[in-house]
View 1: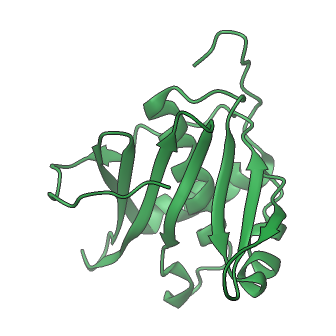
View 2: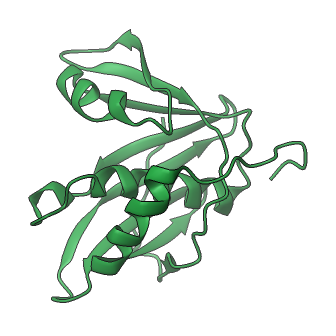
Length: 167
């Protein structure tokens, strides 16, 4: 991380939510090039809940590109706010893994309803619609503000051989 980037303290909301997420689920990742794929597994049942979590680094446009974020946590019982905690944790793990600074933005494409009911409500980010994309999609972005987030509980696992696609 750039030494000029002094990380903000972790938000009170996430200080409460991230431990709740990690009590129930374990998170692992594999990286290839400038992309990470994340996996969520239920601690009790050992069932893999999600594997559709891919973040890529676009060094030329200074973007963290959220290629896929479908953690499926909303389908779990008593999982209110866990998707938000998951997103927060993965973005910070990814940023720490690749040394991302506040000069980067976070970029993703989603449907307007998902933006309004999820991304727009994430108070640790400032997501806004940048443009209307093809079909019923919007391009969404937020500045990246590094925070003091412990991410060592996210463990690396061997690469799956999946070829990641970037922007």
